[in-house]
Image (cartoon, rainbow, N blue to C red; front, side, top):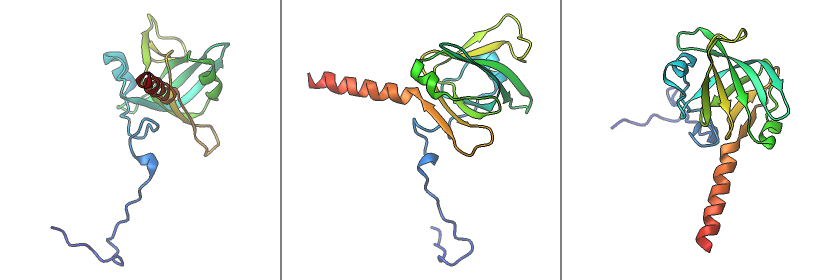
Length: 168
């Protein structure tokens, strides 16, 4: 058994408990990062996430299309398309712009292989989100974080639906 050190000892470490540091459905802090090259080779790891920067963004009537720059495990930078084609409410909440840094859950993402590498991209695939999205981003020049998690809303809806069914 270890001896406890005195509170005045310089070796005493304080443990800072922060609600954001716990792995939860509302936080992407502990989701493992998936390398873009692994996405090409093995497909999307639904439990993972990607971390990068948006290079370009296009807003259309019912979708947002973007080019993301993401580092691989070999520290190479790869660019590829990400398409958000979710509910109108979700798209309205996604106030994404070029140069925004992001952490994007791969849950619900589908990889669409492309026959050729588009001119702007370096990899032959596109990530498509149609069912939901969980993303955290930091707009360029801001310290404020943006967060959208449509899965949390879906889970709450399902929970409420189940409670109402059980009550019948």
